Amino acid sequence: MTQALPHVSLDSSRLIRFLTDLSVSEAQVSHQQFSDKLGQLINFADAIALSEAHTQAPELEDEGIGEFRDGITTEFLRARSSIVQAAMRSFFPSSGPTRIRWPAIEAEPTTDSASAAVVLLKFYRAQQVDIYGKVRGLHQRTRDAVAQLSPKLSRIAALDAALSDALGSHSQRYFNAVPKLLERRVEYLHGQFLAARDHQQSEGAAWAEICEQLRREVQGLLLAEVEVRLLPALGLVEALNQDIHDVPDKEIPDEN
Image 1 (tube, rainbow, N blue to C red):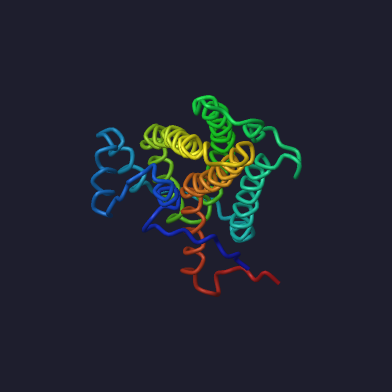
Image 2 (image 1 turned 90 degrees about the vertical axis):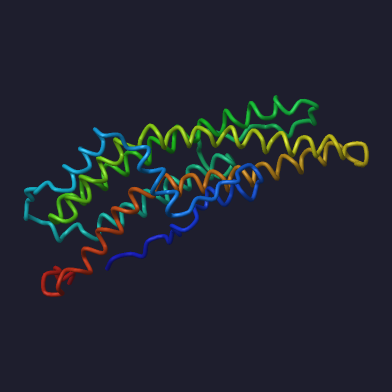
């Protein structure tokens, strides 16, 4: 049986909403603006590649196709869970082995926001590199598997590959901007700490509270970024499940 996929709203990215809630982003993009901006990012050579991907007539192998349709969805959900769990463990290293660890910025209050920002941004960028590699591998595996299942899905996979090539550098540039927005948030919270410092009974406790708030916010921000990075692979899995529903019942292999 096909497993349920995580719901993602296409009307508003959780990453944009999260950055907006942190008051570091004012991005509001309509569907028309999105289409216009997307067109501006694709040059003439990319447009030719997309056109060729859309019209190609693939040759498919028929052997064993039905046996691993559901397996693709299962593998996507398993890998997605593994990526999320590994990222979350880094915020609480005592919960399990992790290569990337949340920095010990709460050791003592600091009068310099830059020093706190530096270690946080190093942590976040390390997470981005790790997640990028894992998601890219999952995306490629999903595309290769989906492409074998039907002419329609093969065209979708080819179009996905062409879009990835055309938009890869642009999307990476946007992800690289997230740590810069995070730096603004660190500066803001640090400024609040300094402004209220003279009225606080325990400076150390107040700073520890700020650091815990940062931990929660960075955790939510990273989860939102993981969701966005997974969207292309998720789109392929959703196309696969739609293709399964479009197949007459008599053509779907009996799982019993």
